[in-house]
Length: 568
Ligand SMILES: *[C@@H]1O[C@H](CO)[C@@H](O)[C@H](O)[C@H]1NC(C)=O
Ligand SMILES: *[C@@H]1O[C@H](CO)[C@@H](O)[C@H](O)[C@H]1NC(C)=O
Ligand SMILES: *[C@@H]1O[C@H](CO)[C@@H](O)[C@H](O)[C@H]1NC(C)=O
Ligand SMILES: *[C@@H]1O[C@H](CO)[C@@H](O)[C@H](O)[C@H]1NC(C)=O
Ligand SMILES: *[C@@H]1O[C@H](CO)[C@@H](O)[C@H](O)[C@H]1NC(C)=O
Ligand SMILES: *[C@@H]1O[C@H](CO)[C@@H](O)[C@H](O)[C@H]1NC(C)=O
Ligand SMILES: *[C@@H]1O[C@H](CO)[C@@H](O)[C@H](O)[C@H]1NC(C)=O
Ligand SMILES: *[C@@H]1O[C@H](CO)[C@@H](O)[C@H](O)[C@H]1NC(C)=O
Ligand SMILES: [Zn+2]
Ligand SMILES: [Zn+2]
Image 1 (cartoon, rainbow, N blue to C red):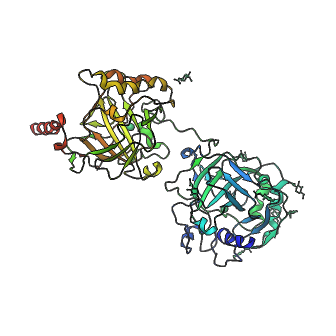
Image 2 (image 1 turned 90 degrees about the vertical axis):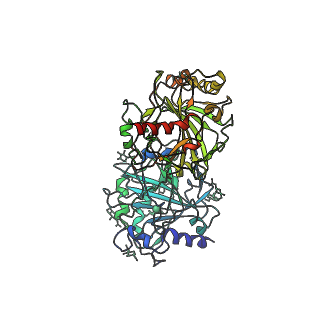
């Protein structure tokens, strides 16, 4: 039973040299160095979700679901079975099915199998596999665990079949020269020979090695084993705090084992996200703004981390009605639950806009020439100043800027938000210009807008949010605006990170809102002119619904424009 469990694991993780002559990969000094691991038969080493990675802390986001771990028998002093030098690393094997962990955002319980190390050479050349903001630590310890009740073969096929805990080791000038790290490193000399497997009677636990590292502070991402066959089956946990070990003990890994620099180079994230537990300290997010009173105003948005703001398909744009192309395929939209008066979950002041967040999976948009069904997430506003003549829309039409613009943001229903941000049509945004009615509107038309703006006094503070209990539907806010007459182009989010993932719909007719209600936006938030300057159209085409489809005064507009063009 023991050996059955043991052998496949050895084959998978260790590729133990004496047992498996086929395993002739290496870090240096042979043909199959890391850049050639992809050529090894059956290997995934050239996959897209490889490990290790460099963790860029400014791009890491906090995930509240990353709760604390529960560790079982990490404090037991009788769990380390043997220590072995397999030619690639020094590994301590653990008693079968005794050491376990769960929690930490993992799906289920994992059983620890072994732990091993990656190091550099001498104390001056560090050798951790993961790096943090480019910093490579001296050593990295990996505690390898396997999902409980899952075979190794099954685990290899799951994205979280294995969970590996990575601990960095920092070499300190002083500290404990006896203790568990002394016992461990003094045994390195006994195992210099390739593949020698020394039964040990270590009287220390895994906890003793980890010491006082705060295990509530960690990073999380999905990746691979870092040795061939690099199976993309690992949920990685990298702890923020390093284990402090005296430099005289650290150097024994390279000096007493005849293995040096046994770390794989870092790999690209390829769209993956790294998250962190709530306790993990992250650098403050750089502050961006619209005006010139911060480091990152629109002219510098492209310098923000992960920014796409200097791309070629950015939004907003000026819509030049003389160069738009009529497109008969731009038909009517299908709006699902736009009439639902309970769809708004809460309203919040983001510091950049007032945003109404909708309940999950309730409101949808499709049709209108869109190739997918989109799930509506939120709507928000762009505005100018409190002045009656102020103009604050993002898009302009023939260089005319409107007083305000409403954006209804929807995400492809078949994708997660992260996935949608990577696709050119991952998001669909409906843009409506807002302007004041020439004649004062009837009271009843303004009731939904009055209800909405009455919440503003509760969200004067940035980040404040308030539950919306009033009956307000999106249809109520849009009123009788013609939704069959619009422009269409491909663009980006108009705020950092400006991902070029948006199918834009800009409606021709304006939504009418009383001037005094429009003034509430800059008044209560105390920020104004919340629009990005228009971006270059470059070689993009702007399409328009056919004039014939339009109704009301809109029908005349393109005609008049043509007439004027002829006259000039
Ligand atoms: C913890 O280890 C002891 C032996 O040291 C073992 O009897 C016990 O079953 C282990 N606990 C778990 C949950 O595996
Ligand atoms: C957790 O694992 C179970 C069994 O493997 C699976 O059915 C379930 O979908 C997983 N849940 C999540 C959130 O991944
Ligand atoms: C690593 O150890 C050095 C020397 O003791 C110390 O100055 C440094 O703060 C430590 N780094 C971390 C991240 O703990
Ligand atoms: C370990 O084994 C490999 C392959 O068999 C060999 O190339 C290497 O020299 C050996 N190292 C030691 C320290 O014996
Ligand atoms: C190796 O570890 C054992 C405990 O298993 C300890 O008694 C021994 O002193 C260590 N070896 C050396 C060379 O220190
Ligand atoms: C382990 O044994 C050594 C002596 O061999 C002793 O010095 C050390 O304190 C013991 N450690 C623990 C954690 O019991
Ligand atoms: C281990 O490394 C230390 C430090 O260089 C050295 O003094 C010692 O002789 C080495 N031991 C063996 C057995 O190689
Ligand atoms: C806004 O913040 C101030 C100061 O922190 C606080 O006194 C006030 O109650 C907050 N207002 C609201 C509406 O939460
Ligand atoms: Zn490893
Ligand atoms: Zn917007």
